[in-house]
Length: 371
Length: 129
Picture 1 (cartoon, each protein chain N blue to C red):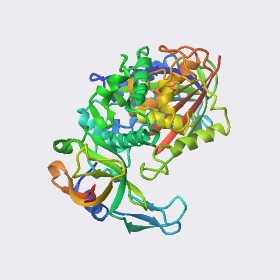
Picture 2 (cartoon, one colour):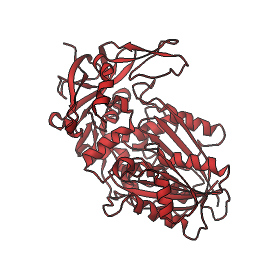
Picture 3 (cartoon, chains in turn orange, purple):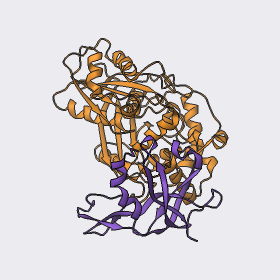
Picture 4 (cartoon, rainbow over the protein chains, first blue to last red):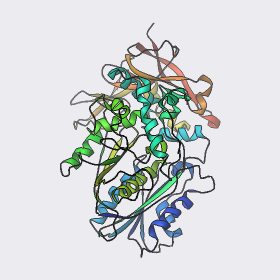
């Protein structure tokens, strides 16, 4: 299947726009001049708490004037966007030849304390008996990483610094300013050792990709999407710093494709520690070495393997259910040579990677250029 | 989380006595409870040990609204031997808490459910005296 059109809204505090306006904006752009779609799949997660609308896909399709089309909703927490793409890929092998995937979420309809309470529902609800705050598990994991591998706090801070420096060039990014690693340590503590600068900003967003079975006018080929579920709690993983379902999804892809030899990756970095866990769980870096590799420039735009040239969740932003769709759009544009931010020159193969929480589920999408 | 009376009521035993699941075939223990073990075995309820060792922890400043007056809250990953769990660490300051510390379960108030007025109790962990 092929990515033929993409559209993104800048991640921001869109107080003037609701879920429907945000979603319709990108959907209309992606559908300009397109003669109907077989399915609309809406990926959304927090919107069900922030701006509740059931059967969202159908309501959106109807508002878009897509009379008689079919609509579905996908909710898979932070991985909703890539989950929708996986469902679209199954449909495109069957009765559909054109599917519009729209990711949308609002995080600013409530004061941030309440939004963080909504975000804790991404983790296993049955263990949320402690009023411990959204960042607590990430804080536990980050300390474990630093103590086990003997990595200091400043070395860890190179991840957010890299994301900010990348996002500066991305017109769709929420935080378009550079920060020095030292500033990450000076920011407000969130869940020590994590500061606010280790996590994503609360912003709204929407992105759309049009997926077709035929390659005409394609930006990139979406070769495959793989996924797996994992332990609901970090307390259950054999090693809490290893995202089992991500390794499994990645291995399912590498059995069929050369996914270890890609030119760029857009991956899930809800926290600094998540980025490092994702890199190591996919085998893109040795265990315990990712923080130093980031600091040494291995994943910088001109490094060996550019990661998150968009700025990632950390600086592009993370409108939960929409994020995977942003990643797909960004990778497709990179492979077509038309990403409006930092370009990875000559990129031919790329990955988009999403995880919910710390691994209740994980998704990997593999894309190839068509040029 | 939702804290209406039925929700709080039906989880009381698990919260008060730290009841998890044990697989009848392979013996693996889980908290919170599971319905079937990955090995395919059937799970039964089991009361967990009340002492453990702190693997790692976080000092949380960005807490939920209801915990604001006792911020920062310390949350830890605790090794109970048979399994691990994430719990709140109390009766210790951020300066005193250390990975590797031995902790024991203690019955405490967890929070209140706002206007519906249910006061939720459960187990937290404190350093072993």
